[in-house]
Image (cartoon, rainbow, N blue to C red; front, side):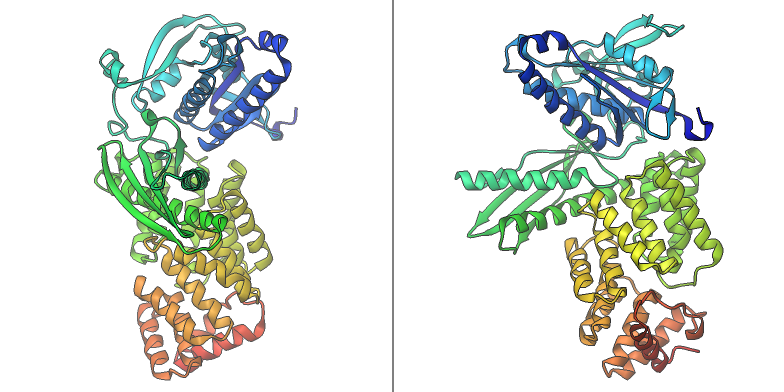
Length: 576
């Protein structure tokens, strides 16, 4: 075996198979195959939702790996709850029930994705010890999750398992309900607030209710909930779960439709305090039902993600940095980079460096650090050095090696292509890849729009940037989206509109060089010479070292666009 094609790492392994599969097949092959296909879809959906990876689904078995034990056990419990509920009304002899085992240990991973080792073997043996419809875990998994999972752990003692020399301490997991809380040990009843979690905030989505009682209103409510839930499942930074016992947050909502107009009211409850901390209503002006649902799903999922992100950052800010989990460190560091406050960027770097010192193989921490290495370039404070570009390239390549499906990593690579290397075609490809992974990602929508604008296609790019800017007015990066819209109107020579959007960006984030550059040149071309000179003077004050001769050409593909941009700045009084 080529040693360069394998790696050894610590991972949580989930192994599952169908209890009584041969009996089911002998009784009714077609029904069994149909049920197995349905079960596989549930497994795949929840494994990927909880940041796991399916390794194999051969026959009636499932093998998956996760970066964290809590991710694996949360997925396992959600899967079993759905499957067990779906077969509850069937005769006992026709119920397809799975047994699941979870272990945390070393494994060998080949470049083609296959895995080997004791970690896999022990998970498979634990699956054999599980009850039909149940989950059995090793002692090391129980140690990792017991303070962060509302569940009962039934100790079944040391188990001798095939081909493993030492006994494995095993536990059966029972999800905890209000009726059995008193019987649970103190360690098992700790809530998520007791110990900082290493995992993403988890969200349970409750079915939306309809304010109308007619079948059409009920169908619309179900369709709206399905689209919003699907958008939430794809968002970076959240884990969508299906059981309230493991959820940090719960989303509730109502849908009302009247003469083609749709309104959705959404609510967020923090289960650690049992209090609703946010609600808002969203109206869709789109005429078609499908268009309306797409629009609502984007806006609502984006708002929910930001509100949870902001709440997590507020909670973390009350504790010393050394007490924060890696997830909390990354959340704060990333939140800082959504804005354009130069004074805060050094804190972002410090936080993410702590996270990387704990886990150098964190793809998200590497991606955030890559973004931080060029944030001053993106905002126009400095020109990129060869070291800046090389650092960003190295970090983001490593992040994508660890997780090729990371929408955020592809976003940063697209940004590097556009603003660092000025490679527009590559930026467009990466932005599209990002949107394939997460169609509701407004940062990627804006980046794709910007790349199209710079390529000389503002008619195609501008709607993307406007869509991103209007998705969530409270989103911290909205000033950047507004600047993108202003740039699009500049390319179209609609200078009045460019000025309006550039001023909106400047009002949100004052004195950011990139915003002021667009504003000054647009004002001059619009015949507002006095305003252009005042904007240029403010730009020089906020970035004293800026010089027109040293200003790196923006990635305009058409020379005439850059010449107009440059000429407006020169006439506004930017120093040569």
